Image 1 (cartoon, rainbow, N blue to C red):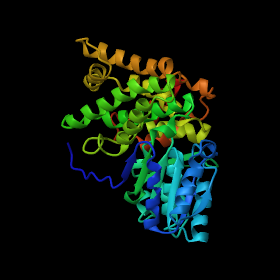
Image 2 (cartoon, rainbow, N blue to C red):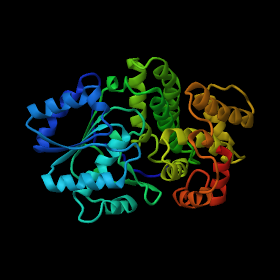
Image 3 (cartoon, rainbow, N blue to C red):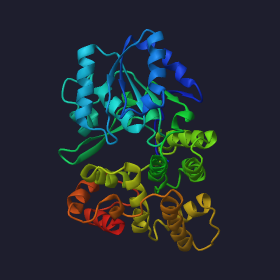
Image 4 (tube, one colour):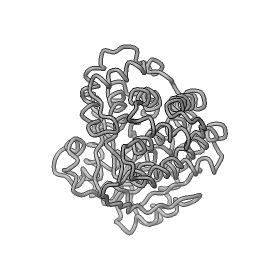
Length: 386
């Protein structure tokens, strides 16, 4: 296990009715920018509830609406401009990971003299940000408790992750009841996303990180257990609560610090989203089994076998057979249990015309990953997923 610093400054208010803690924003000023997406928070009542609480607390609210599922840099720029025009003192995101990601870069952009895109492609430029708050409505990305944000510029077919210590939210409200109305497709995609975060941390060659791997396995078992329950019973509180808390821990550093290599499936999927604007979780569900099959080898078989035994409960004694069965179970979980697309063709990607350029860009993000992949390796994985 290598050296690390674990620091999660985010205060979490978890459970029913915890949105009342939005009164605490008044401790940080009197002018907040509210970021949200397509309007679902107005239909389900969260918007009115939040505005009422903030009004009573003496916080004036300005709005950045229409944040996209793959948040655009153009929307971030619009938010930064609103901050400058209205002397904004804090940023509040109500929504899923995309809305929180957008809010994070808006908050950093408001403290930066240049263009916000600089902060996406050069994370080292992120030095400061307005205080960031969130009310989570979709369990998936873990952005409510981490330092990361992903922003797209679709005019360039580019989607990049950025990060900064100051991008960790000051406070996040996690009320599982707010996810009851999440459609089945997004529930499934969110489950795939949090599982992928866990896989990216779990699959490493570091034998010394025993505790992180056992924690990761517990998270994966939780996701595999409760994902189908949330699909079948959307208002099952325990299912939604356990998925919500698992998603936060999948990426807040608990299972990655001290062992995690560079991620690889995410950079590959970011290229799919950048070129085709597909749902992130669906892209991950399609690519993950193909990636697993590609990197399975004599060097990696022991860890895949451990995954099969400790997560899926497989009992075989032959590592390779257990490893291959674990990959089959993973694919079947995504496609048969969670009813997600199995191939790229099912999400509208029917040819290979962009694979070479996508793979070249993704290979840069995969440097130092569990199994280093070349451009040609990534093209093969894309082809296997067609």
